Length: 288
Image 1: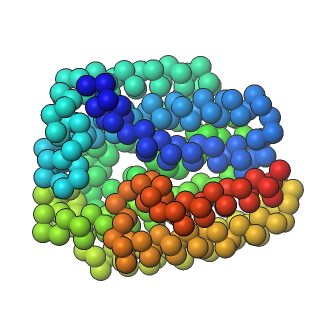
Image 2 (image 1 turned 90 degrees about the vertical axis):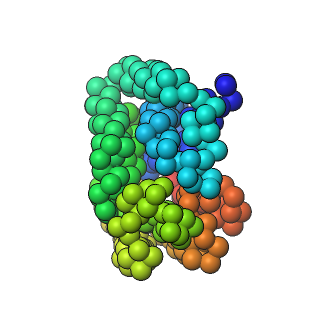
């Protein structure tokens, strides 16, 4: 039972909450120990909130997950965790997370509440509205990045928020495409919104977002405003890593059909994982 509850929390997906640290890294605050501690607490809080959201989603989608070739083994869908236990877990994780957020600061607490409300709307409504479903997921990442800035009381960079939004859209549409291709005729039975999509439409959406991600990141790295704020003009050296990462992910989507979970793809695909690590090391080296 305990192992099933841990699996229900999806600790592997906590990697997504690394976005909370973006303001710490790009805000030049990583050398301040107290600020780093606050940022790590913020990440832990979002891990609790995210797990409450994952548990809620699994609870709502338990009947549909039973029809999915992989999700049927999830704790609630497989019957290892009862709906009652899942409800208790949702409130426990949410309560601890919000209480901890209150002690960070009020703006951060409000951001956490809005993050959960957005996910609540997604679980019961927005996930059934075409395109808005993916945009809602992307906004969840934007709130993570914004909340990270609020936690350590640094200005939230517009460049950071826009780049986060575009990258999340890219990954979100890629995930929808993978679901549609993998489940084929049974896709709408698993996720109702997939009936509104087609591989061609998703390819068009990905085709629009992909260049936007690359171009916006390039503009960010060469912006005189950003260079003055960060104290360096060398951030452009990280562009090759971003371009390769985007291209590698597109390859995995179209040739290996592995776009289901961006987090799992990154962990399982060695070239992509190494690329992300090298990008992070290069960023830190340039900034610090």
